[in-house]
Length: 426
Image 1: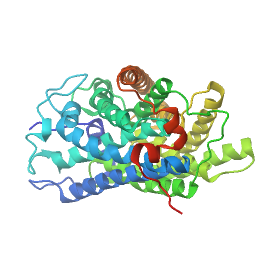
Image 2: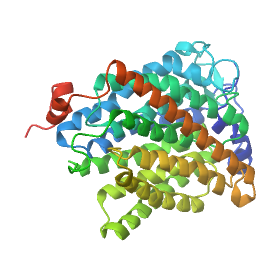
Image 3: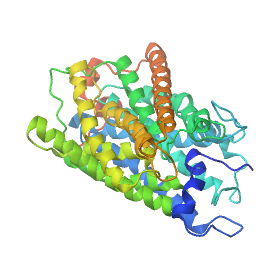
Image 4: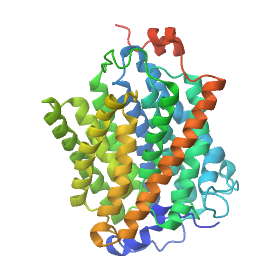
C-alpha cells in the first residue's frame, strides 16, 4: 500500500521539526493521532447539522424543513458516494494530474492495519469523507425556497463526481497538478469554499430568482436558530482545520489557535463594516462574519500565525460584507450569500495564505513571490473549473428533469409541497 499524501500531509515535514514532539516509534498506528483524527471527523460531521440550522434560521418559516433537509440529505447520499467511488477518484490509483484511479472503489484493500503515515488509512478516508459531505451542502444556501428536492439530490451526487473529486485530487491527491505546482491549501479553501461558492453562482444563474425577489422582503424567521448554527460551525471547524494536520501535534495546535482567532476577528470586521453602513451591528452580521473568518483562515490555518490570523479574519469580515452587498447591484438571488461568504472568503483566504504564510511555507512577507503566484493560479483554476462544470450540469438537469418547483408550490412553501410536513405547529 502506497502512502497517501494529501498536500496537508505533504507539508508536515517542513513544519514538524519546528513544532512537533518526538516521532511515533511504534509499529502500528499512533493512538493519539488516530484518536484526534476520529474526533475531528465527528466534529466535521457535526458541522452539517450546524450548517442546516445556520441556513434554516434565515429562510421563511414555510421553508424551514425543506432547508434543513438540503443539508441532511447530503449526509446520506454523499457518505455513500464517497465510499463507493469518491475516495478512489480523489486519492486512489496511480498518480495522475487530473483524477485518481478506480482501485479503491468501495474502499477496497483498506483494512484496519493499512496505514497512511501514523494513522489507519480508513481514518484518513472517513475524515476526508466528511469534507466531501459538507461541501455540496454549502451550495444549498443559494438555492433554498425554490429548488426541487429530488433534482437537488441528484445534482449534489453528480457534482461530487464531476467537481469535488477532481478538485480534491488536484490539490491533495498524489500527482495532483496543483499539489505538484506547490499550491497551499491546508484544509480546503480551494477544494471546499471556492468550489462551492462559484458553483452556487452558476446554479442560481440557471435556477433563477425566488418569486418576488428583489421587491419582496425575505425576512429570516428565526435568527436564534442561525446563531446556534453559527456556534456549532465554529465548534466543528476546529476539527475541520486542526484535524487537517492529520496528527495530534504542534501543527494541529497552530491551526486550532489561528482558526479561533480568525473567526473572532471576522465577526468584529463584519460588525464594524455593518455599523458604518447601517448604523447598527446585527446578530445576523455576527454570525456571517465569524463564518467569513473561518472560511478565510481555512487554507492557511497550519501556515499562518495567530497574529496574522487577526488580519486575515478581520479583512475577511469586511471583504465578505462588501461582496454580499454587491448582489443588490448585480441582481442575482444568492439567497443565503454562499458566493459572498464562501466563494469570496475562500478566494481571499487562498490569496492571504500566499501573503501571510510563515510557518512551514513561504509567502510575500517572507519574500516568496512565486508562492503568491501559485496561489493565484489555484484560485483561478478552481473557480473557472467549478463554475463551468456546474453551469453545464445545471443546464442539463433543468432541461431534463427540471430544477425548480412550480410557482404554486413556491407560494405555499416547500415544507408542505415537497415533504408533506410543517416546521411549527403552534
